[in-house]
Image: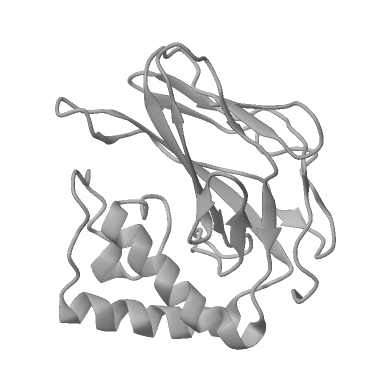
Length: 208
């Protein structure tokens, strides 16, 4: 997956060596933990909802754009609550691949064709994980995790490619992504690759 930039607030992504429909999910994750964990800050923009951004690639297009993408900072008192909501949604929709929530949740990273229903144990585990991770979360730095989904035989987007995580993004006032990532992942449909890109993300003033 390549990341390109046009303008100051638009991020454009391309799935290398692939032509067809796809869905790309972009989430914020922690930067300093051994394994990426979902971050309580929220991505905001035209295609963003509940703190994450989702955009569909049409068969006739070669790139997906995320215009006016920004980062909204959560206040410290709302970290645990926001994080729990983020974890529940990621697990329900199958967006938890590549992030660490809790061992009982992390083992369930298969393809999701319909939203999962959480049982009482899973809700309790996620609530506890959110409370624990909130205590250690660094609110001054984030990373982006990009996950692409290709169509399945039913027309849904459940064929997941390996996620790619960006370099750490610092600065609580204006975030400049001068370099996202140089990591490359081998996948059946081609390479997921993020070379360099830059865009401005201006968070709300009630952040850190």
